[in-house]
Amino acid sequence: MIPPSARWEGGAEWLRGEGEASDVVLSSRARIARNLAGFPFMTKASSEDRVQVLDPCRRRVLSDEFKRASGAQSVMWVDLHEVDKHERQVLVERHLISRQHARGKLSTGRGGADQPRGVAIGLPSERVAVMVNEEDQLRIQVIRSGLALSELLEQIDQIDDALELGLDYAFHPRFGYLTACPTNVGTGIRFSVMLHLPGLKLTGEIERVKRAAEDMSLAVRGFYGEGSEAAGDLYQVSNQTTLGKSEHVLVHELEREIVPRIIDYERHARRTLLEKRRPTTDDTTNRALGVLRTARLLGVEESMQLLSHVRLGVLLGLVEGVEQHSVNALMLQVQQAHLQCSASRELTQQERRIERAALVRKTLGGA
Amino acid sequence: MLCESCGQREATIHEVLIKGGSKIEKHLCEVCAQASEIEPSSNLPISELISKYMVSPGVQPGAHPGDESEQRRTPATTVCPSCALTVREFRQGGLLGCPGCYDAFEDLLAPLIERAHEGGVCHVGKTPRRALDSGRSKGDVARLLGDAHERAERLGTLRKQLTDAVEREQYERAAQLRDEMRRVATVQQDAGEEVDGDDAHGEGSQA
Image 1 (cartoon, rainbow over the protein chains, first blue to last red):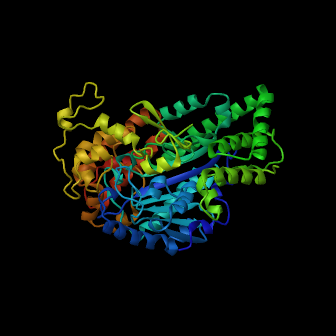
Image 2: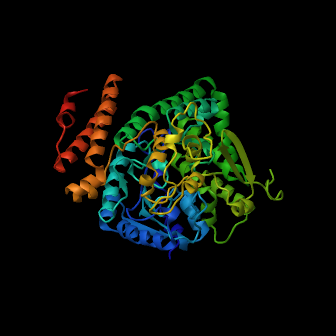
Image 3: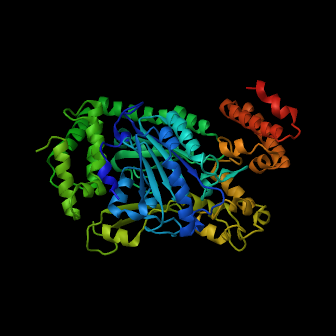
């Protein structure tokens, strides 16, 4: 099998920094959970069950209808139980599979890396990905740069229909689409936006905004989802409720009411930094660029934090000579598995730090 | 910082878990993190919900102020007849075993689901097209949207929610409820059953 990493020609589309409100919203994502009628959920599925689910699902994601609905030029299928852990980790870093799916293990502890499961990825944009045999049998994801939840809903709806042409979904008159975890029943849909909030972080208002979002029953998480730290001042905001509200209502609440408010807060914080704390902000952002251009050793977390400040500097017009899209791309390239996969042999931690620093210096025009 | 587990290598994996309101930090090196497979639990909300809103014999719920319906909530069924998942397994893992579990444990799950979804009790939104299209015969539709009694009950609930929404000037929600009522009523018509005139037509002019 061709290793997935050999196929990444362009950068992930969602990191391009385009679209509505892209100064604050890095990307938007919609994900739906589906299970097949007549099969146990993963918790109770034997390896045979898993294969019996995998086969029809794979046929559907490789169908013409799916390709059309996903708008992809081609669809790549990866049998995750057959690729090595670095390859799986690259997919995690590109937000194409969950960490749980990479491990093949459920939160209950069942399963393992050898369990039959896979992912379909629409190429070259990587906008569409379908995980098969994750916590739910199907987890369909569509991702885009900027604030674009309405478009995502439209597309994921079509993809869902295309898959459903050959699959019989588990559905309940009261609880809607049935999922392994009762917190996902109903529409089974989660929308999330990845927000870059360095302004709120620097002005110290981030906790207040986080609490406010949580009070509105939204989940606020880090760059890599549940349980991850907000590396590089990146926060994911998503709906918690999936039952009792239609998909359109959810989109409306997030896209028209809640997210715009957070965007306004962040923009206000950035203006404050520029107007009232200009020398400090000028120093913080340019100093970050200075470190990135000269460092010989860089860890992931440090890189992400410095890149966040540089990105802020570029957006505020304080940092010159750096393109925003190369900063965005670096946020992915500095991740562990991405570095590992661009090397020809297994790197030690120290070697990765050296490689990371070299990559960053080269990209940002350092010495 | 050195790894908490081996105390030799540099800690590069830092995780913060919020468990039961307290913060637990873990600092591990890559080797130990992989060995321990410690992963932030992906179902913290559900474990919290289970401890607070699920009652089973012999186990005190975490927080249940003034709950008088404990006995009523105690499930009659403790094993799913379709997949053999036990209530105990669900309490521990937070995941159900099969679609049939939702019927087997309906009474037990209902309060928990309502909590998890901010008061949402009934599905609103997309319905499998294939199931609806192919399910035009009376029996199939009933299977899909419940029997006549269930649908009548649901229409009643929706009507009440609609009145609430209009009173609170939540027009977005009102519109959504109307759509849902129309859908249930239409299915009722298609199924060849008597339709309550109010449900099918009455709500169109409001809001």
